[in-house]
Amino acid sequence: FKPTRLPPTHQWATEQNAVFTSNGLWQRAQWYPRAGETHWLETVNREVNTVRNAVGFCDVTTLGKIDIQGPDAASFLEKLYVNAWQKLAVGRARYGLMLREDGFAFDDGTTARLSPTHYVMTTTTANAGPAMQHLEFCHQVLWPELDVQFISVTDEWAQIAVAGPNSREVIRQLVDPAFDISNEAFGYMAAAEITICGGQQARLFRLSFSGELAYELAVPARFGDALARRLMEVGAPYGIAPYGTEALGVMRIEKGHPAGPELNGQTTAHDLGMGRMLSSKKEFIGKAMAARPALTDPRRPTLVGLRPVVATDALVAGSHLLPKGSPASAEYDQGWISSSAWSPTCNSWIALGFLSEGPSRHGEIIAVHNPLSGTVTEAEIVSPVFVDPEGKRLHA
Image 1 (tube, one colour):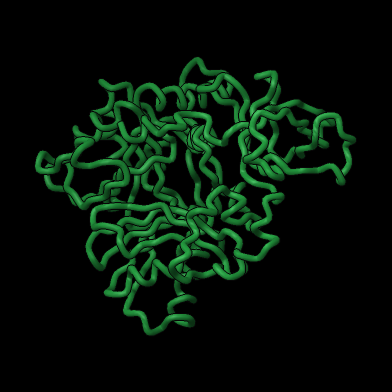
Image 2 (image 1 turned 60 degrees about the vertical axis):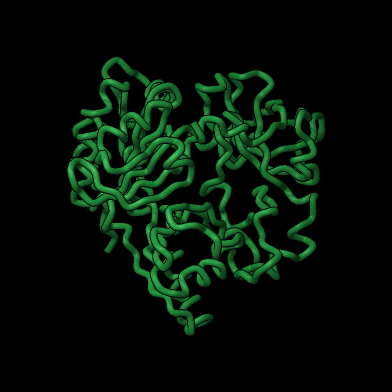
């Protein structure tokens, strides 16, 4: 009744002595320890540094994938997402945010346009099922007149992220010569149906969750294991190594990307710093309710970054944010930490959190209260983007 789901690279990851973690029903590699590494954080730091300085790869098959086709596919996406989709060019992908009907954030991901009437949507791993249910409800109940069809293809495609400064050179070893993946021909957010390894059908997306130059390569699921092994072979001269979900999480925090802890059902687009994405030129699910004064109040807790005054002082997710020197009581509570990690890139603990009037308070020192351990740590309020705020690495 509750079967374990294994991604296509599971057997290969087992051979690499990976430590696994449960993501819903999925078993995913959390990190890949090597001989001589005595602590999981040592392993994770190595994996992060490998991606930041060379190249790494991660199985992201568990992300929800929904194939959407039909003459009204673009119109359908316009109604689902808060941002515009009609003018997305073929061969391009775009980030999208979906709201619930009550105006709160529901799910996010990228959707790529493969032809004028063909899109591939990705969702978070946790919301793959609920997102598919949401699309079915919207089509069957709200807009049955739209000529659009869709189906979950999560299990049909193995998808591996290849990230790091050397990622393009590694991908070049696989992509057939007929396809130009230079920066000029295949820029950031490009998407294409291609062939690899001498004619094998594949899809290539230039997407990045880590903030580095990165690609996601999709092949039919039965070839996922072979793709991982091939990446290790062709990537060896470039210093390639696999990385797990823990390193993935560290890098997305370093880059300020919201994920499950931020999309917890209690946050709005404005809370996430995405208020400008809400289109004023079209209707979409949640638009009216998202405009309620209480949900656009600048005093609402809004996404910020946090860096401890003493770099080695741990910032713990779930801790409360209070003004420096105030009593530890609920009436002074101004927010909370949603995600935290030790960052080998910043050589410091870092965190994402939600703080009342947060964006206007960068540079302020705030008290981080962890009631479970009874500790109080001082942290500076900073931008949620800790690494490469200009995005130069993404566009390299």
